[in-house]
Length: 478
Image 1 (cartoon, helix red, strand yellow):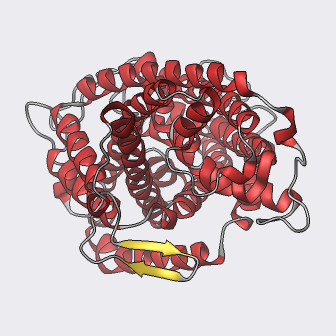
Image 2 (cartoon, one colour):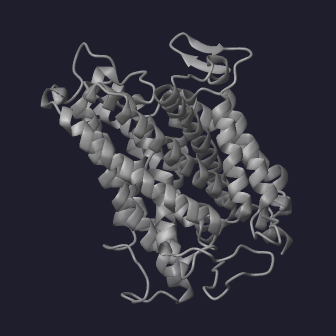
């Protein structure tokens, strides 16, 4: 299962073309943007000003899991991330279930971020040129309302479809070119968010943090229940940690760079999330976040009374969310590549183009599915489902650490205190156990509907495994 560092470009395989900086930027690019640019609108109505604790809780949970990722990625530096970790530790069936979680996680995350991109694009066009995208071409056909599901026949959210197609074109040209483009967009994104923090703090009002927790008579959940629910919603934005690990076969010296990339991305992301959350809450009362389109841009416009700060922010969001969508689609294609290579789905998903060394057919299929969801479905349906998939994936990764250590002991390859690789501190049970408990705690805050839909998806995955995967798997043929 292990991939050698020396295999620079195995025939018919993926090419090693990325270093530590590009890898870290993939993690930051997949993470910063989604939780801040969009889900503040979903999370603040649940938790109020205490949404800051929600980001801290989500970051703590992600941090515990990041340590598990770092150890596993050192020993299993392969494409496919959590799926590859599960395959090498807990077996093929559970790995396939993990793959189903990851496909749900990445596919819906890419669709949701593309939908949010449409809002900021419309805000940018309005401030720059005084022109709005026609409602018919920027609203989905299937919309969630307080009264239930509403069908707007004839409507399509066209901008997300265009964005996904652009990502498809770029990813088909090669991982190195995509990583370079992503790194540029991530740097622009960080500068834009620092600009937001600087401007928003000029309108900081400490009264906006009072009362800190939601109380009786307010909409949303009370006290820590609201904090937990909001943390569950924003947790999907830490998907970037998993995306770093999906690049295990395309990075130089993966045993060193993948663990470092994961931990560095987590540190950068957590600092920026907290800075932006504090600045945003200080600049605007919590009640104004609900239903606010292109929220951060509107905050700057309200604070300054001028359109140009909102114009700058919207332009930055248009660029930065492009990078989020790009790397989440990238992550899903690499997971499909790994599953296909193991024979659990059609072999066409791991066919790579001779010139670009990328799975082009795989990328096209993923982009079509993601584009259709983004163009016709309301983002409200997607956020919690992505979090459920992410939390499940993180729990399996946490389980994989003690299982891997146990296998090493049985094989006589485990050396206590051995140097030359990352091992989580305090033994193989404490940190993974805390990670599992934290993920389970956040799952409690997700809606009943989310759990029901997720159960249906899992049932479909189990059926697929026994109907196709088990008969065609590489292990079964061997």
